[in-house]
Image 1 (cartoon, helix red, strand yellow):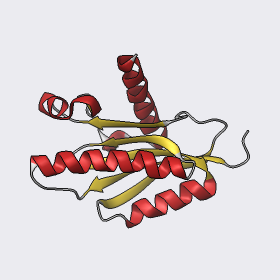
Image 2 (tube, rainbow, N blue to C red; image 1 turned 90 degrees about the horizontal axis):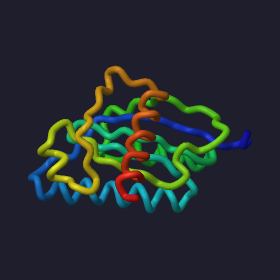
Image 3 (cartoon, rainbow, N blue to C red; image 1 turned 45 degrees about the horizontal axis):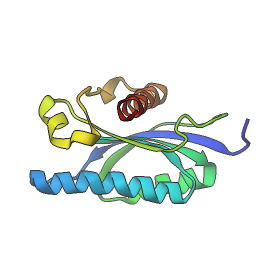
Image 4 (cartoon, rainbow, N blue to C red; image 1 turned 135 degrees about the horizontal axis):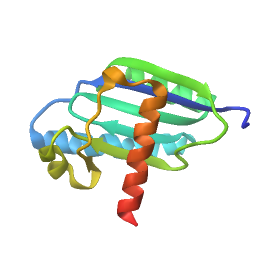
Length: 147
């Protein structure tokens, strides 16, 4: 077991709003910033976003994961941040940064194209393990589609 490898899973209510063009730019900027900023500090994971919430898995050294999560809690786009799990793990599920937009309708999937998935999800039934599994499945689906 890697001495300091941790996995943190959380979701938060989304405070982002605006016209469709502004939302599109915001979603893409959030996804891009998550990939760049978190990878820079050695944190990998996956981000899922829709009009109502953010859901994310962070994996990496404990100090880096904790600092990243603190930054998320201070971000004005996040509200009601709920920690679902924070555990020591033997290996990363997400060796690189993954991202998915998960919409609840075909219109959302059509609108966001390359980052869309119309599967939807129900946070009221999610545990840390279940949310992590959903994000892992979405990432595997994206990898298969890209191959």
